[in-house]
Length: 179
Figure 1 (cartoon, rainbow, N blue to C red):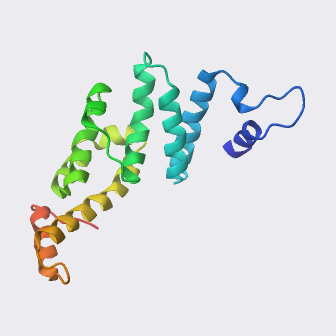
Figure 2: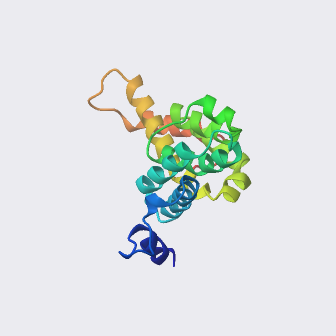
Figure 3: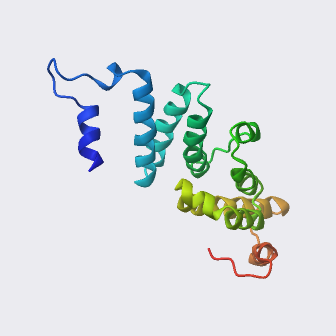
């Protein structure tokens, strides 16, 4: 049902009674961008979500730390999905430590760290509404692990599969890892 409301805001009927989106106060535009970004995230339109949430974050007043944190709770996983890692200082500044290990795992291809972090912060991620997106980020961790194995071998033309099998077995600990 949001599509009708968004269409009404994005494409107002020409006339004196309606105003364009840009004519609303900046605070309203920022709030609107946040909610359209969240909606785009739930509809798997990650580029649109990143654009809207970036806009909301940039226009959010510096003093509104709580609001900036709320925006970042959604923006960080979306940016991870798109391959952009946040700086550690940003996560510390806005008290988003739950993302630190996830970002480090993506950066290094550390599957164990990723799984442990997801397990440890599962309830937090679910309450933020980003757990399923972070599960999709697991593919980036796999990709970076495979890249590490690839770069360790000097002959880059053909690699035996047992190298990758060894890497995945090392990451399994005592439990099965699902792809």
